[in-house]
Length: 320
Image (cartoon, rainbow, N blue to C red; front, top):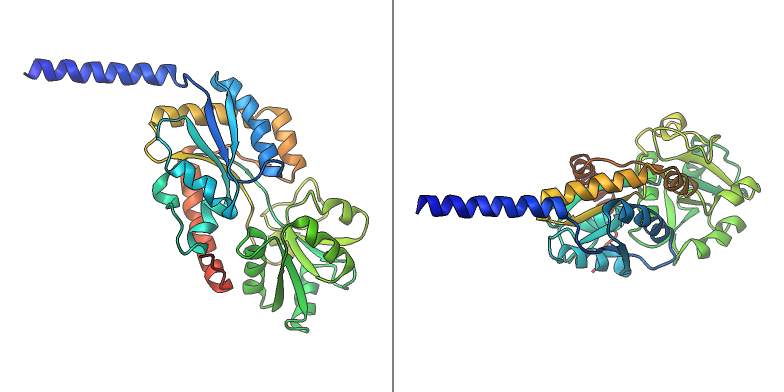
């Protein structure tokens, strides 16, 4: 009996080793939980082409937008943990959603296995040229002298753009009114016209208006400056050192995915991120390429869950 058990174990280990060596043997579905055409989708597709080439299998992008990215994320959370379905998520469904949704159908910590953070997309504080402040400290003084007289725009209640502004309000004591829009395209003419006075966002959409003098960029929410806006001070330089946050991209797989598959996915993804064309694309979108290990990304996810929970609570934002 002992010999028989030993043989079974040996065959099992041999089979597992062979599977690890041959993985992947078929195309991999990359779920992007946002509509096609958005910047996160474009980045996933461009990276996915090289990633698939590194893996030796096609990566098929499957857009499953809706509910702030939680619909597509839930699909991956409930998919077979075999390495053939992965999620290209961001700060919304993989960090903020845990505190924002009263009935989130998945648990970020329990239902996903980290693969790698792809990039960080820092926010910049943009203000209308119609108001006088030219620095963050001037804006704080200006705002405090006009409690609730200033309006800030966002891309929706509970979005990263909304919550980074709530973080700013908490840290500085500036009271402002929230005006949510359906997207950047709707908010842009409002801040250019001065009907809203401030909006945090990632760099690309607002950059032409900064260069044209229609908007001002006061601070970037990172410890260092961006090459796209080198004149804009970092949060520590601007005197708001705790104003750190980004709309990052990252890849996770269903929890229980074999470690060998996670390792192969990670290795080939990081290699794709390192290709100059991919890095240039990320930088052009205001992103900072990362390529972290699964353990590093896991620690990052836990820190993000802890960071955004009190901001969501203080903002009063909830989605049923």
